[in-house]
Image 1 (cartoon, rainbow, N blue to C red):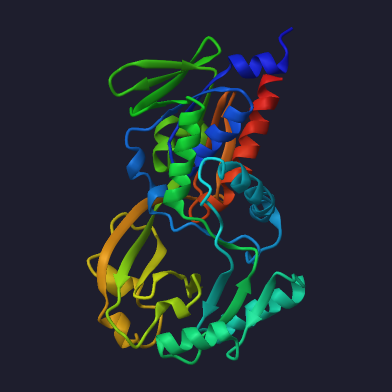
Image 2 (image 1 turned 30 degrees about the horizontal axis):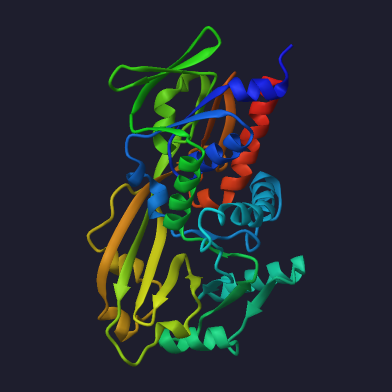
Length: 360
């Protein structure tokens, strides 16, 4: 009988989709000795390139169930993976802390209750007398912003992460094809992935990480997996106002669903995830800056220097994400909605365990 190590070394795995999830699966499985091929027709256009990279783990308020279990595992794994990936990019890190704010008094009461009940030393309430709140209130010319701070959560630069993963994959000589897979089928205990050019790629295992397009490759009548499109979008705004110094603000924070990242004293990024849209509306600036009763003048007069978006997928009728072995040797790993980067380590660990069990 072949040893498990021999099975790993001889098994060929095709990963369809080259976003954070696909590349993280390639990283984990490559370290175990598998032969990996990543297939994606347009690597630079996947939704991971539009991600802001906020890692909201410890401040997640539903501390039970599968979603929390995945977060807990990823929170533990991320520092290990950062240390590993720094061999390929020593500047890669998680910027901490992360701040969640609201102008809604009822939401603030829930935040206080959450922190009181969980007694987590890494989470604290931010009242009006906090220096963070004072600086934010001053910059945004408001008085009613309050919230919480997490000293263990933060942000990883998604583009930097993707480039670092690419360096690793190149170092490991992992095969990468810019092709579109239009059909997969089982044949004699192998999977055949057919490209649009009608070329067949044989593998022992296929992992679907290609967001909305994953459902096009499986028999939905048997598996009944449904995904909805979700729009993630962001703008970079240049501020020409000497009276405000954006560096007085925290590096990353969230106000009522809008994510704000300060890049310099006169430049910031604002982003959000909007459900069930597939294209940004014409009034993107108005929509993304509409998180206060009254916008400060410096924001009203700000100029968009860059804008971008990506289409993500959200499961319809079941929790996010979808992680299933739907047939022998066929795994689907998609529908991460807002948490693809955060949950990538836990996802890749789950996939690796499923494959180990399958090959045992």
